[in-house]
Length: 247
Ligand code: BJW
Ligand code: ZN
Image 1: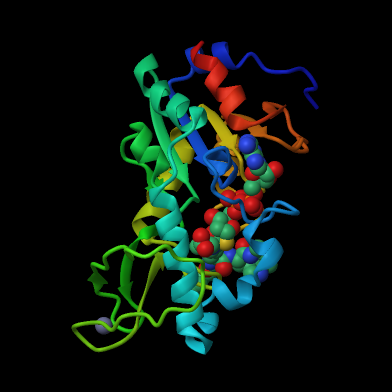
Image 2 (image 1 turned 180 degrees about the horizontal axis):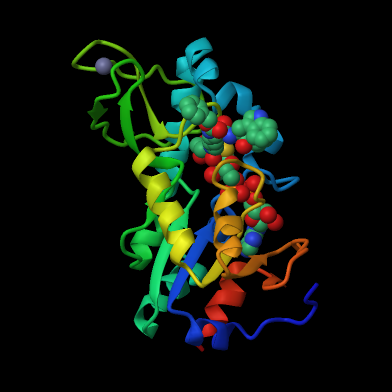
C-alpha cells in the first residue's frame, strides 16, 4: 500500500488523459452542503427516502418541489471555488481532461470546464414526472426556505413537473453513463475529488479506470482507504490541494 504522498504535479504533467471524478465535496467550499457530512450534510437533517426518491415525490410532491426550488435558488448565489477553477485550468496544461461529476450544480461549467458529464442530472433542469418532456420553470423571485410549494403542471399531459436530478432507484442518463465509462477506460490518471464513493453505479468509475492501469488519487478532507498499488489518498480541502497546483 503506497503511503507516500504522490507528486501530483508530475502525475498530471505525465498524464495523457486525466479523468476528474467529483462529488459534493468539490462544491463544499462554495457553500453548497454535501449529503453525508455528519453535521452539515443534507441527509443529516432530511430523509433521502422522502426527498430523493420517486416514491417520496409521489407521496408529497409539494414538499419535494419546494426543497429543490430552494436548493436551486441557493445555487444561483454561489460561485465556483479554487477547486473548480483549478480543474478547469488542467485542460490548459496539454493533457486531455474529462470531468465526470455526480453533482447537480453547474459550478464546473461556470469555472470554464467544457463537456462536463453529469451522472446525476441537474438542479437547473425540469421535466415532467409522467411524460418526461423538459419544461422551463423560472426561478422564484421571492427568497425560499425549503418549505412546500406545489409543483407546476406539464403543458403537454398535465402531469407534475419535477427537478431534473437522478433519484435513488432511477437509472442514470444512458449517454452520460456511457461517456463516463469510456473516459474511465482511456484515462491514465483519475483525480477522485470530494466524494464518499458510496452511491452506485457512479462509484464504479474510478475502479474501472484503475483496472485498466490508471493511477487513482483521492482528494478528500477525510483519509480514503487505499488498498491498491497506483492508488493514493491526499487529505485536505479540495480548494487548497487543487488550488495549490496552479501556484
Ligand atoms: C470534501 C470537502 C472538501 C467534504 N474537499 N472533500 C445497496 C448496495 C448498493 C447499491 C444500492 C443498494 N441499495 C440501493 C442501491 C442503489 C443506489 C445506491 O447506490 N445506494 C447507496 C447509497 C447504498 N443507487 C441508485 O439508486 C442509483 N440508481 C440505480 O442504481 O439505478 C438502478 C436502475 C437501473 C435501471 C433502471 C432503474 C434503476 C441512483 C443514485 C442517485 C443518487 N442521487 C443523489 C441525489 C441527487 C439529487 C439531489 O441532489 O438531491 O445524488 S444521492 C447523493 O449522493 C447525490 C450525490 O451525487 C451522491 C453521491 O454523494 P457524494 O457526492 O459522494 O457526496 P457525500 O456527501 O456522500 O460525500 C462528500 C465527500 O466530500 C465526503 O467524503 C467528504 O469527506 C468530502 N468533503 N468537504 C474535499 N472541502
Ligand atoms: Zn407531461
